[in-house]
Image (cartoon, rainbow, N blue to C red; front, side, top):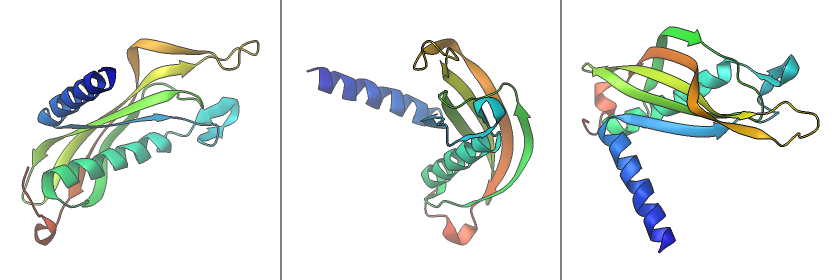
Length: 149
């Protein structure tokens, strides 16, 4: 019963986000993602997540992975550390013949606690913290478009 309920709940959440045109990835940043002193994760990791979100959006919209052409804007709003959980959201805001304008948001949803007495402690952030915003353009060549979203 619980498994059926959870599947239905997940399906309805997933369908609602798809109807609104969003793609989402949630990921735990590991110590391997930390690039700088103090376990700080490189901002490029957020851009990598946005690239994966963009790929999903293009597959859903056009049936092809397409190509990421350029970011118009990138704003790093707050630091991300190893142990933090990040959700990356994206959506297509406009579509031309082959270009797709997109916007992306990355939110820290769980923050690893920095406490030497409790190294496994973490905190759920309510509300989540916006850590990165970006907008950019992707392209799917006409001959690669298999469907139109």
